[in-house]
Amino acid sequence: MISFRQSLAVLSGMLSLLALFFFPLGEINGEAISLWDDSGLTAFAVVSLLASIAVILNLLRGLIADLVMVILPHVGAWIMLARLDVADQNLTSGFWCLVLSAWLMAWVLVDQLSAKKTKTPTAKRFYNIVVPVLFGVWLLLLWELVVRGFQVPTVLLPPPSMIGARFMASTDILWADFQQTFLKAVLIGYVLGCGSAFITAILIDRSPFLQRGLLPIGNLVSALPIIGVAPIMVMWFGFDWQSKAAVVIIMTFFPMLVNTVAGLSITSSIEKDMMKTYAASYWQSLIKLRLPSALPFIFNALKINSTLAMIGAIVAEFFGTPIVGMGFRISTEVGRMNVDMVWAEIAVAALAGTAFYGIMNVIERACTFWHPSFRSSR
Image (cartoon, rainbow, N blue to C red):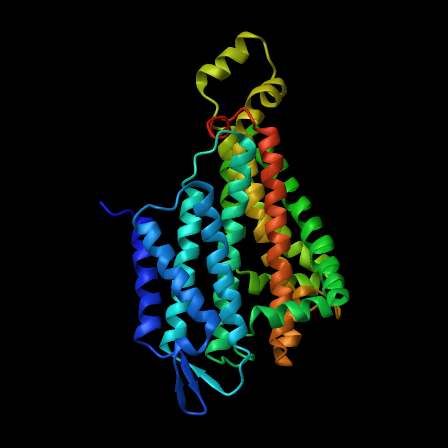
C-alpha cells in the first residue's frame, strides 16, 4: 500500500513532469517561454522528478534522504525567487507547477522528520524545533513567491522581504513600541490580573458564600466586550499604559480564576481525608497537597493569558494612547497606507507572544515535572 509520503512524492513528480513537457514557464513581452529556456529551473525540475521517483520506490533512506529533501526544495525555491526578478514577464502554469512541486518536496521532508524515532531527549528536542522551523520557513517562501509572482499590490499584502527590510530599518521605533506595550501594559497587567485572580480563587475555595457570589460576577466580567471596556478604562486611568494594563487585568482575570478554582477542587476525598488524619490545617493541606495538584490548571491559565494579554493591550491602544505603542503604530500606519510597517509591528507582537508562551511552558515543565504528561514524553 502506498504511504502518505509516497503520495506526496507522486504529486510532486507529476507537477515536475507537467512543467518540463506540457506547460510553458511564462511569457515575456507576449512571447511564450519554455522551462527549457531556464537552465536553473530545468535542472531543479529534473532532479525533483528523480527524487520523487526515488521516494516512491523507497530508494532514499536515512541521512541521505534527509539531506536530499533539505537541499532540493530550498535550492529550488531560491532559483524561483531569482526568476521573479526578471523584468517584463508573466509567469504561467509551468512556474506554479514547480512551486507546488518544491512545496510538496518540503512536505515530504517534514513528514520524514516528524516520523523519526529518537533515542535521546536531546534528539527529540532537536526535531521538535526543526520541524516547526522548516514549516514556518516554507510558509514565508510560499508567501513571497505568491505575492511577487502574482504581483499583488503591496498595499494589500507586502512580501516578507519587504516586511523584513522595514523591520531592520525601524528597530528603534519597534523597540519603543515594544517597551510601551509589552514591558509596561502587558507585563504589569498580566501580573496583577493573574495574581488577583489567584488570590480570589483561594478566597472562593475557603468560603462557599464567595463561591456562589463571586464566580457568577467573574463570568460576567469575562463576557464584557473589550472594545466597550477599553474607552472606559482610558477615561478612568488616562492615555498612558495604566489604562491598557487595566484592560489586560480584566481579560486575564477570569481564565485564571476559573482554572485555579477547578484545580483546587480536583483533589480527591481520599487525599483530603489522609491530610485530616495527619491533623493538617487548611493552609497546610492547601500548600502541600491541593496547590501542587492544581499547578497544571494554573499553568494552563497562565499560558492562555500570555496571548490574551498581548491582544488586550494592543486593542486598548486603538482607543487612546501616547504617540508610542504597538496598537497606536498599527492604527496610524494603516491610515498612512504603510502596510509593511503594520506587518512589522504584527511580527513583533507575534514573536513577543510566542516567546512569552514559551517561557511559561518552560516554567511549567520545571514545576510540574512529576505530572504524567511530562513523564510519559521522556
